[in-house]
Length: 628
View (cartoon, rainbow, N blue to C red):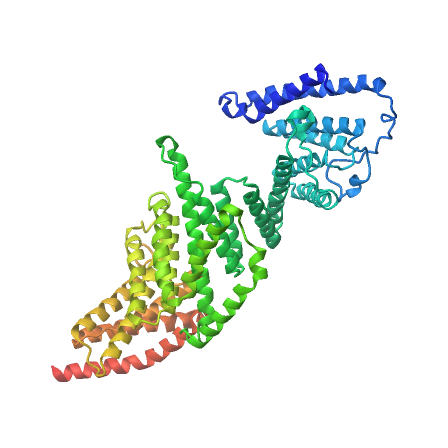
């Protein structure tokens, strides 16, 4: 191999690698594959040279090696079920025939990848299958195992790209089995395919070999994660995704922003499964690693800065979802049967959660990090745990973290280009305050949390174009109406605590009426949005608005009957409006019996009020007549 023709082959190979990996990046737009085509010519020449050496070699070295029986070939359109006979059958790699087959296989591999890169998939597939054919004659060993795995990764991607996911799965799972068996039985750092064509002094170190081999296997896992997700095997996909991310960190081979987004996406899987510890860990890791992407100050890279901003916003959104789901789940667990906070239950659950989080086994099962990042991830996580476990700190933590997280999310999703994104973030933010208010014992503070929700949602509800954003506006109107209603109830609770007597002072009455009217106004706006352009009330309510519409009618009635006024005519007017809305609920459910199930409680109370209110109205009328 030290002769001149072999040196020429090695030089061509190095040149082909340089063209393919480096120079191709600066190919002109009108000739995007120029360097790839040049590399292809060189690889084809190398293949011919290898074949020529082989023809000339047959006579030179007749030491019995060439008479090794050639292994039988297998049909190779897809991958056979895991065939691990490859470890015991075929040419050994240190035989001349074994080395030749591996070299030819490597050139076919690079030709295959080259054709795939230039979008010539069938030619690419043919070269990759030829590579498999050459390898099929060899036994798996440290000299060729890397190629065994690389070629299957490439075929896995190729078939997945053609939506032949099962074929893809076959190749990738075989690659996984080969890696696992090799590591169990041998485990020494394997030769990299590039080393088939370089001089002794340019061989890779053990460390470099290990890194390249582990990276190839990391790709296998990454593609398998996608295959399992495609087949709906979500838990398996999540495990593979986790392994991929962890290995990328350890090998220090990753794009920080891409890695962080993948980790944030994985967190969403854990959160939906209620595995908050794992979800939190993924998000803490995402936050730390996205910090490695740094800021990009130069003007030239404005696009990249925008992208970074967008990706950080997406991670911020995942944190919001984490907090929101955590609080919602906690609220469900801690509610007593009328939706109030049950403090005994809370203490009991807090103890259980501590026990669960102390289970080291589960904690160790999912920990990201290499030496560099481990501590930073742990510290971000600590901040979150402390913030969420201590209830008083809960509000402070979320206010603080939302002022950090939220501007990041909001900043990117400004109103113009990302209207629905922006609103969804605000709705999540509002829902967070709503869930937090549930845990707050101080009524004043509870009120302030709901006020924050109003301040967030009211401006956009009024700014949005009612024609284009009808559904979103309906959601916002309904939420605003409910929020004002909640604030009104809290105001009343406060007033009743302060005043033993029935008399409320004027300021409190004014405030109460303002909240009451605001709630009624938004419920009414919601109901008006269901009418025809001429303002006609629909005879039949569609299923998606049936319950909200009946609830809104019921609430409007209730709010009107609660308004406080010292003027009898105003009182009369409010009671009549209340009666009219209660009647609507009763009559609609009589005309459409199937609707009753959608609002059972509201219907029952409305029937009661339709019986009682006329008496009250008549008494008021009689009083007014007497006074006149």
